[in-house]
Length: 342
Image 1 (cartoon, helix red, strand yellow):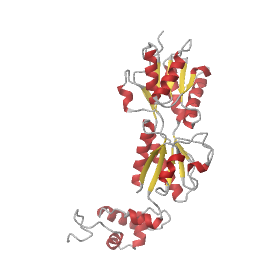
Image 2 (cartoon, one colour):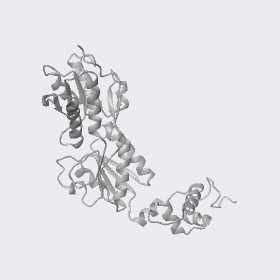
Image 3 (cartoon, one colour):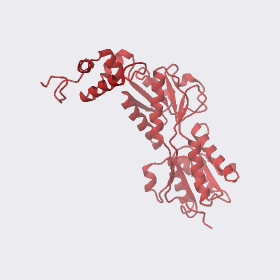
Image 4 (cartoon, helix red, strand yellow):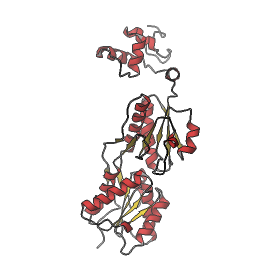
């Protein structure tokens, strides 16, 4: 075979085309195109489908995305708006979304800030939107892009938009149960903002686990705070000033937990001898803190990937329901929690 033969894999030959696969397999070009695009409505014999897929792999076929975009009137790009990327949780969600988008032939464009401010920059450049900034104060569907297909990520709000979430209640209950199992009964909770679905669900998980274990829910042992170090420090300072003070803190975010650890030291407390602390979401920095921080690891990458799958379903005209990722939360035990100091 010569170098120009489409059946001869070579770094020097031209890229394989649909008609090359059609000629090599004896399958009509339009059928080849539908097989390679994953057309679920196509009825074709399994052996024919396998022959086409094998030849495409043999020839290292790559779709012409520009031509595909023109044909489908799509930009082949997905937008994603999150509050910030300093929060490791959003960065991990974006990684999962980017991986799934790439597998599906899409680019992911990530922006930070409010939907209203950032959507104008993305308008006309994306086929759909992943939204990680909705709150109970986001009152109008129009604020999420009007007719633009959208999926709420890590949010579940009454906006008429499908959502993809993880089991925040279960993760919060897991953290609370761990502290109770160590012997703590006066457990404070530094909660996330209560106008955000994540903050409310983590608060509910904490509340429910106390009730399940026969412990009283004491409102003064909760402090609403932002998901950052400053918020965690302020929330912890408020709770540590109580008398009697809590012997343990469950903090609804890993960055806020770092701030809570700083507050404990400023109060002259040793972790975990005087105060135990458990954070929510895991991050590499958690294992390098002093002491290393016990956390609850959530399936954030899986959530980002599922959000892209749900959005592509909307783009294909399918009905999409709310999804909660089934992968369970995982308690990562380190050294920041111990039995209360008698």
